[in-house]
Structure formats: C-alpha cells, structure tokens
Amino acid sequence: MKRILGKVGIPALAFLIVLGSACQPKGESKGEQVAEKLGRDEAVYIKRTAGGVAETVLAMDFSRVVSPLKIGEFSQLFHLPPVRQGKTGTCWAFATTSLLESEVRRMGRAEVKLSEMFIVYWEYVEKARRFIREKGNSFLGQGSEPNSAIERVRQYGIVRDGDYSGLPVGQKDHDHGPLFREFEGYLAGLKARGDWDEGRALAGVRAILDRHLGKPPERIAVDGLTLTPKQYAESSLGLNPGDYVAFVSFAYLPFYSRGEYKVPDNWWHCADYHNLPLYEFSLTLLRALRRGYTAALAVDFSEPGYSGENGIAVIPSFDIPQNFIDQSSREYRFVSGASTDDHTVHSVGYKEGKDIWYLIKDSWENAYWSDHKGYYFYRDDYIRLKCLMFMVHRDAVKEILAKFR
Image (tube, rainbow, N blue to C red; front, side):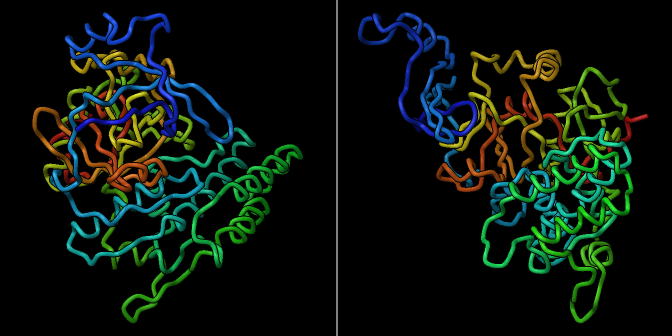
C-alpha cells in the first residue's frame, strides 16, 4: 500500500520539499536511485501550519513501508474502544485506566468503563502535597507515569466513568488548560509567599479541582451495596496495585536491578523500575502479549517516523538502520535528549511475520487522523529505540522478576 508522508510532531500535510537542489534534472537524482537500490528511507521536508504558525519540518517518505493495513490483522487482547484525552496532558491516566479495564476482564470480571479523571484528581492533589513538602522543588506538569496512576488507585481506589467523568455540565471534551493555569498559579503564589502550610494549601488545591472537575464521590452504589472507591477497586474489581511492575532498559543502571526512571514525569522520583538489557526488554513485552497480558508503554512520539496520517510508527534508516539499534544507540538518544518521554499508550495486540508489529490504543488526537481511528501500528524497531518504559501484570513476567536481586 502506498503511504503518504509523515513527519515530526503533528501530521498536517501541505507542500512537499524533496531534499536536493532546484537545479537538479527532472526525474530521480542519483542519490534517490542509490537509496532505492539500498532500501533506504528518504528524508524530506514538508511545510505545515500549526497553531497559526507556518513551519518547515523534517519528515519521512512512507511510500515504501509495508505495514499491516487493518486492525483485524493483529492478534488482539480485550480492551474497550479508544477514548480521546482532549486538551489535557493526561495520556498516562487514559493508558493506565485502559490497562486496568483490560485486566478486570482478563481476570474474569464484568466489562466496565473506569474513570480516568478520578485518578487525575488525586494525582494533582499528591503533586501539590509533594510541592508543599519540598518547598516548591517538585515538578508540576500535567504529565505523569503509569505506576503513579497505580499508586493513586492504591491510595484512593477507583470508580466508574459514570460515577465521575470530570466533565463540567454541558462540556463534552476535556480541556485542562484553565484548570492547570489556576492550579500552577495558586502553588506559585504560595511559594512566592513562603506559605508551606500543607493543610491550607491542599484545601485550596481541592477547591480548584472541585470547580473544574467536580468533587469526586466518597461512596458509590454497586449491585445494591454502597462502597468506597477503595472497596470497589479491591472487592468488586479484584485489583491489587502491587501486582503491576514497570520495566526500563538503560545503561545508567545495573541490569537486573531496580532504580529511578530519570524523566520529569516521574515527578515523585520512584526508584522501583526494573532494568533489563534491551534484547530482553523488547522480548519480555512481546512474551507478555503472547500470554494474554496487555501493557502500558511510555514512548517518544515526536519523530520523523511517527505518522498520524498513516497511523504507523517506524524508525527511518536515515536515523539508524533497524539492525544497528542496540543498547548504546538507545542510551545515546536518551542522554542527548533525542528520545524523550512524551506520551503513554496501551499495547493491546501484536502481529508476527517478517516484522513484528504492535497494536497500540492511543488517546491523543493524531491517533484519529488515519483510517484506524484511535490506534497506531508500531513496528518492532520503534519499540526497541523509542519505547522507554512499559508496565504489565507481574504474572506475565514471573521468570524475568526471578532474575532481580
């Protein structure tokens, strides 16, 4: 299938500028002919307008990429349909909630749509708490990590989406711009005044959250019973937050040990990430899916080979050939800032053949620009180079956990 061009950032095609000089003769250049013979991907520039600003960005020509064409080609695991996160930075909550919905069904419980915003509400409270305790020396962005979402479930439980949507009356889509500006401004004001009274600060934060998201329920009705959100998570859904483990693959940590995932969204500096060599990291993810377990992934999605228009993610050869991806190339990109923790998604299927492809459920807007709305297809090279972390149920990885000291 001939594919259109993708690019770094948000795909919005306009004009194509092929690399090379305007004085080239008509037809293919010698460089293009060589690239074609060697099976190399071609780098191109495209012009786009984003947020009213025209810009030129480096992109990849996807016309020679052979990928799955339909979602039905994948071996799929149970998951609910994709949900848009709107104008929020809460992909981590959408991906983790989706993972838990799959887990509930995998464990034989009834299908249920859970509330992303219940987790987000309490995550903001805990971010504010740490900001106060650290006297302003703590990250306050909208981003976070799946294991932090799991920690909120441990602390506060969870509820159904019907119990708490986090949407004001009459609003259909999430928009946390106003909320976060007020949240951040309030805490910045406390810092400027040196006001570190935790109780008073959190009361102010909760007033802001209640105004924008609504007050979260303290009890919900479930099958004739009145339960707290913690009772619902543990008794009705059978969720045990301690069952979920996160994996990374970095040279800055000893392999088969646990340590900190050093990204801003790990705002609480959790050091419970299990570090694996790269070959085992990618194989462990694939084996988990083969065994019927889905996984939440933290990925870099600002890449020339990441295309919303095509709904696929690959590593172009002008970045690095597939066979050259190794621990060192991965580490170099992380340390240099070429690979960043931009986004969290839910891996819900796979396809094995000449290449391994992963079916990815995605809440961000560019996942709805291709024919497979709400999904991406990731090739294995993208996982090996640009998937920085994944989280899965520990029963999927028992033999791997046995290697950790």
